Length: 461
Image 1 (cartoon, rainbow, N blue to C red):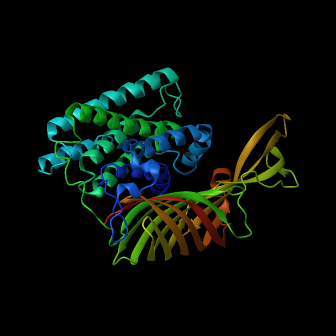
Image 2: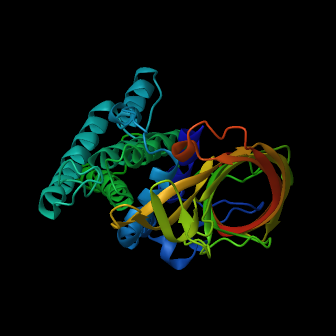
Image 3: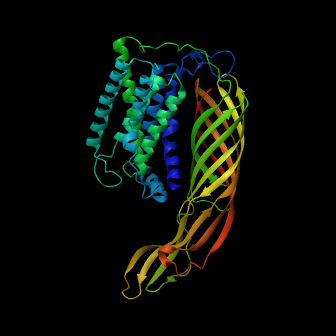
C-alpha cells in the first residue's frame, strides 16, 4: 500500500504539466463549451501561436526543475519516509511503451498523422536530439545520484526517453482519441516517479528530463514537417467543430493543505489527487478520486523538562519528534458543472469514502551521555509506534476552470475533508523489543483539512 501512496504523490508532479501537451493535436478550431463554436482567434492572444502552445509544457517542467533544485533533498525525504526500500525495474521497459503503442496501432491498421516511414523518421530524429541533449548535460554537470553510485544524475535519461516516446504517441494519435495521449503521458509519468522511488534521481533531474523529451520530439517534427512541406501524411479532419456535451474527464491536481483543528501542523502539507468523473448529461456526473496527503507534524518537537535516564545513558534535554503523517483518501460522490460563457466552467461536489493512514513513530531527540565514560553524542531514540486504522471521510469542494484548448482545462480548486481517525499506540519495538507489548492504547482525533491548488483536466467527451 505504501508503494501506491508515494507513487501517486510523485506522479502528480509530472502528470499535470504533461497533460497540457494535448493541445497541439486537437483540432485548432476551438469549439469548447457552448453551442456556437469558438474559433482559435477567441483564445487568449499568446495561445494563438502554435509554438507558444507547444512550449507551455516543457517551459513549465524546466521552470519546476530549477525551482525544486534547492528542495530536492527535502522531497527525497518524502520517499525515504514512506518507501525507503522501494526497488522495481519496470521503468527500464516502460519508457519504450508509447513507441510500441504507435507500432501496435499501425499494425492494427489505425492511421495516425503519418505513414510508418515518416513516423520512423520522426522517432529517429527525436532519439538523436534527445540523446545529444541528455548526454551533453549529464557528463558536463556531473551531479551525484541520490544513491551515491555515479555522477551522471542530471537530467534523467529514462524520463527523457519516456516523455519523448509519449509525445511521439501523442503527435501521431492524440487527435484520434485523447485517451492515447493520456495513456502515453501516464506511463511516462510513472517512469519519472519510479526513477525517484528507486533512489536513482532527484526530482529536478526528472522534471528537466521530461522537458527535454518533449522538446526533442517537437523539434524532430518541426524539422521533418519543414522538409515535407506539410503537417503530416494524413493531416486532415482537424477542422471538425466539436462541443463538450457531457464533461466527463480525467484530471490530476496538487496543492497545499492545512489542518483547521487545534492540532496544528508545523508546516503546510501537500496533497495530490488522481480524479475522474463520468457525466450523465451536461450538468451532473459521478466523481471518483484518490488523494494522498503528506502532513508534517511538529518535526522540531517540544522539549521535555526532565532528563531521561536509561540503563547506561542519560538523554539530556530530550524533545519529541513526530514523523510526518500520510493519509490516503478514496472518495466518491456527485458533481455539478455550470458552464460560464465561452471558456469557463464552475464545478461543485459532495463526496464520501474511506481514509487510510500510514504508520509511524515518535522519537526522543537529544544528547546522550554515557554514565560510565561521560562521552556525549546526538541520539534519536524511537519511543512510540503508532498504527493508523481506516476511517470514514466526508468532503466537499469547488473548482473554477479555464479552458486552454478544446479538451484541456486549468483549474483552481478549494477542497475540504473531514475524517475521524484512530491510532493504536504502543512502545517502540526498535527500542523496547516485545517485552512491553502488553502496553497498548487507542486514541482518536478529528481532522479538518482544507486544501487549495491547481488541477489539470483532460475532457473525454
